[in-house]
Image (cartoon, rainbow, N blue to C red):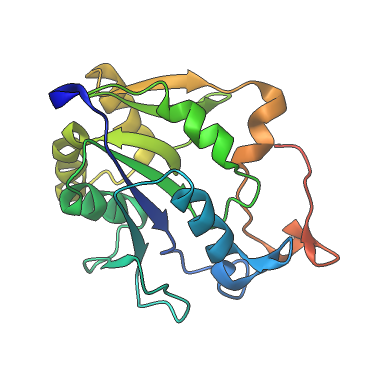
Length: 202
């Protein structure tokens, strides 16, 4: 297949401080397993060449078969984590998934993968906002991420728009009925009777 073959690295973004939740979201159980394990298994099923975990500090739950990428201080959140992962990977594409998206499923990520191409990634759009933490980036996005990290605007929304303008990613509108797949959980109120409440996006 030569140079036109898409190859994949995955990154689990687990660097948030979970201030509103009051505890590490990665270890909260959903459907009988901690979120970190659920998300890692979704990424493993995509059969990437490797998996990174991006975090501010070393997680107690870190699996032995993944590579830890620690944020460079001062932490710039997901922007720093994605930049580190794009820099460290040796494949054509990076699939990113946040640890606090319990409703995401592998079929959705595989569908996004089918829309990529060499030099082209995919970022879902829900309403008028991009969802950069369940997206796929080509290695060509690294220079844009690095420039944003070196600048003063750390907004992933602005960065995604720049990537789309430069035809480095495709923006894919997500139907309203699938919007819940991209919901993140941030507060104790998002949990109901030990499970996450699957209420619609606001």
